[in-house]
Amino acid sequence: MKNIIFIISLTLAAHAADHSLDKDELEVKEYFEQCLSEHGLKESDLEELKNKGDPKLLCIAACVFEKQGLLKNGEFNKIEIIKAAQEEDPKLKADDFDETFKKCEGKAKSIDDPCLKSNTLTMCFLDEIGQLADNH
Image 1 (cartoon, helix red, strand yellow):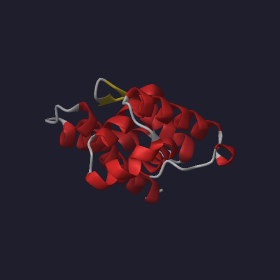
Image 2 (cartoon, rainbow, N blue to C red):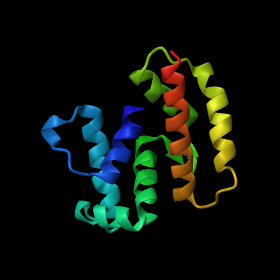
Image 3 (cartoon, rainbow, N blue to C red):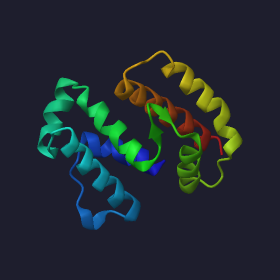
Image 4 (cartoon, rainbow, N blue to C red):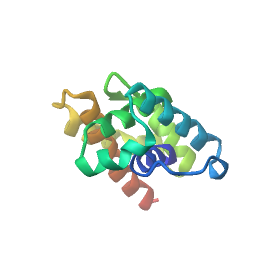
């Protein structure tokens, strides 16, 4: 889960120094930089894109999630999401996620755009999984 939050913060800020990042965060930062390049962007473009509400930002996040194995063809990999969340909070159980996945997938079901769908799922998961963690 830390990686999901980290990529969102990278997408919005993109200014962390390499020496202050752990191994997982360095991997995410590398994916982030690859995705920026694949979309013809630089970190210096991000603030302007954020201010404009440019949908390219959503595609950068989706790209990183795909490289992490968390997302494929616009669908989140439930097993990898659970694994990542449990690494952050070992008290979370796989069963806790069933309702969360159904709820979030329901919210994103009718969205065809993979970038928007990824964002909708991400924001829902962050909210729902955050609530699960607070209850444990």
